[in-house]
Image (cartoon, rainbow, N blue to C red; front, top):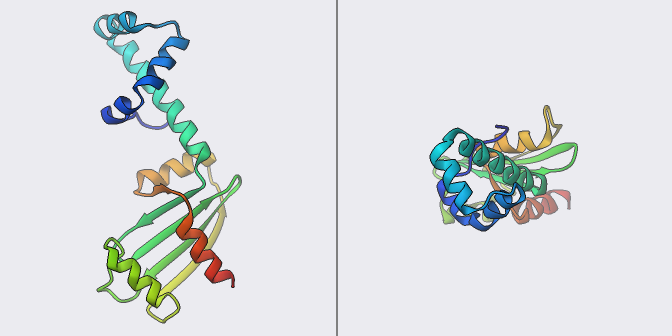
Length: 157
């Protein structure tokens, strides 16, 4: 398995897609039930293959990631060959970016000595989608890039 198996909840959300996936292999509901009962290892393999297909599609489309911690915000722009990052660090230890007022504080203080901003850019050390998956397993979430683009626009001007 290249990534990780989807959760039970994710499979439930993707029920129709999984049914279509099985149908492409000429497996209908009754046959799937038989496979689960008589060949659980084959059923496990099918779940893993489907999970990898879903992850591959999601990761291929991913353009922006965000990772928030108490005093840091990591913003990533995932391009084809490189990943660009903006790291915001609150030097005031009372600030908590995990709370709504933390983002308001950032907005009010972004150009003061209480915020460090670091820009980065590097080529992927491994396959792009695996690198993005690693960031997600470390706590990053997919985003629409709005915060990255706002901060980048402020820095560039």
